[in-house]
Image (tube, rainbow, N blue to C red):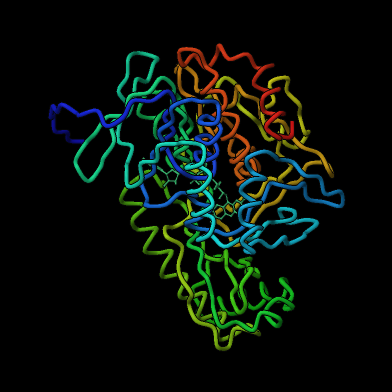
Length: 430
Ligand SMILES: Cc1cc2nc3c(=O)[nH]c(=O)nc-3n(C[C@H](O)[C@H](O)[C@H](O)COP(=O)(O)OP(=O)(O)OC[C@H]3O[C@@H](n4cnc5c(N)ncnc54)[C@H](O)[C@@H]3O)c2cc1C
């Protein structure tokens, strides 16, 4: 690749104890947890709102409950506060399910943005929206701060400890930490542009069996409709006449490649309109349906996963392994959206959970960086279980608390016994 060399002096916009990069489920949760410990926290987010993929792409929290016949609640603490904020505003709907990903909590994503605004403001977090993390300011294994793209040009944010909650491990990658790049390896899960459908006869649409919907997709695809995924789904929402879909599939994309991601955005939007045409033409309840909106961006399931002090494997997940440094739990099945027409599912034993160890959040070789969310240290298969929002929220609260407790930003020096007991006091389920 050709390169230009430039030198720039970057004005300091903020100095803090804990810098959180990425205002999604993991990042917001981390920022709130750290600020409640009295740390000076700056939260960076590239978009104009908080909530990340949970607000921009979808509307259902999974991972709060184990699937199967025995439903057990798996996460608590800040995740409960988020759910409480949505419930109080009357925009939360529990959708019980034995299998699939288990019971889901479906909400209004616009209200979720406000719930996060309130939680971070009450905790005293300094929020920088429209602020793009571009690079690290580094001193060997220590990240001293971040270079941030803003409307006023590049600015620096100096920090003692950094939480990488960018989803793509942007901080770890820029700092030279090790990671597995699912996109570059060609194993990344497929991408999905979700869309909202309005004017639906929800009673009829809801009672139409999923298997028959899939058979109609198969038949329509052979008739010439461009439907790469034959097992797409649509679900009810807290609103009358509104269904939300998870149907499109753009496979084989390395979502950290700017060109590939741009092509995927356009392909996802095109597919969304084609799936809408299919629904309107073929599926009971959708005869008068209209497009209510496309996701803000195409949903990216998997990019970089860090190489941490522990690497969670498929065997750990399926055997519901326990760890002494557990900071969160996961009961969600391995749900793999691969390039083919269907989705692969593998379950833990009924009612069981795998532990997420603190070490899986600590990138090798970096002293004062901790990750949270979907860029954790896990194999492709283990990640396909642990990436649900319930777990991202739970990892975020653990990472934020650890960053606030880390003396001089030394995250490996955190007393794990104290971290766990503080998490339990906060309502976490361990
Ligand atoms: C199509 C799709 C459907 C899914 N369905 C479900 C579901 O129904 N239920 C469920 O529980 N899970 C679902 N998942 C999985 C789940 O949504 C994600 O794994 C989870 O939201 C990831 O949370 P996160 O906090 O790690 O990342 P994100 O929520 O993606 O947050 C990352 C944040 O960082 C910001 N950011 C990234 N890079 C930068 C940068 N350089 N500078 C500044 N800001 C940056 C982003 O804008 C974003 O706000 C789905 C995922 C996809 C893609």
